[in-house]
Length: 420
Ligand code: NAP
Image (cartoon, rainbow, N blue to C red; front, side, top):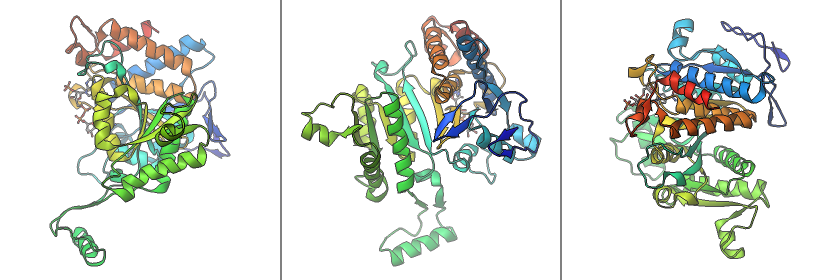
């Protein structure tokens, strides 16, 4: 197998004999008719939901292109399965396969407790520089939801994935490092930090902020969305959160001239109305944003935000439309994309064919969209909507619905496949 000019050699993996790698040209993916797609089945319920997702994706692609296109799956390993084969949870083979083939599907992974690795998921994102965590949040009619108008929610959250609290710089209260840092900050930087404090550092860079906001704006323009809202806590943290907002506006001014207007410009020059064909760029302080997603849900569209704000906001928005069970996600860098369910390994249900594969399947839908295979993606979305509307659902949804027909993981996938 040749990728670029170098042959790819793995320690223990064997590259599929058919299919071809996705390549990148001028920053855009060139997807062959039979792309090789690495997948990590995952720990706990991972194999259940990943298998269901692959079956639905394969069926949708087959139905849409009757054999002229096909996903060529390539199993790679992380977590428990990697520990068994390689004696480590994240082998170089796995990283190399994803770097080579660019687009991967991933099941949830257990975070080893007390090991040297903080979180496998965070490590994957950092090592592969997958700087945007993208979480679309859209209501599927019929899902049980805690708000009166869940259908008003249709947002895509772009959360920065490498900085802020994910940079992981912190020291335990009383440690030598914390004492040294506190002494320095108090002695030389004019701070007055209590001696018994734990200390964390929250870096937010121009580079990290601009590339995240750039991706959000590019997405919004390509997808024909109405607005991008920068979410920050800049009223309190001016040089990190406030700077994120400023750099967001800066990248818009520098790189998207004529494509968007700011809220201030709409008021000053356009009589309070966004001109046709223009994207609105505005910003909101995070606490205000949390109430706005509830009280003015339909006013918001694409959100771009820092790591911690995005963490909270993604789950809060998902809760509004019925929880994490059907919430998809992707971690994307300049080219590499890993698509994964947002839930964890739910170990008590492992291997029981019980849990909801909706989140994994919808992450697969995002993957097909990323490949540009939108017809197959749309087909699956519609089939899921129909399946839920007919109340054929897994236990998690069935227990909140009246008159539902409860099915297992693979039967839910079958029901979707029947409706493709
Ligand atoms: P979790 O695995 O998401 O499970 C928590 C609960 O959420 C489950 O007991 C179940 O609720 C519900 N749930 C999760 N997935 C579901 C599905 N597909 N269908 C229906 N219900 C589902 O969270 P956790 O127990 O906190 O974490 C377990 C492990 O997963 C940890 O090692 C954690 O580090 C890891 N994790 C990995 C990822 C990732 O790989 N991206 C993400 C999060 C957590 P009920 O009990 O009410 O049925």
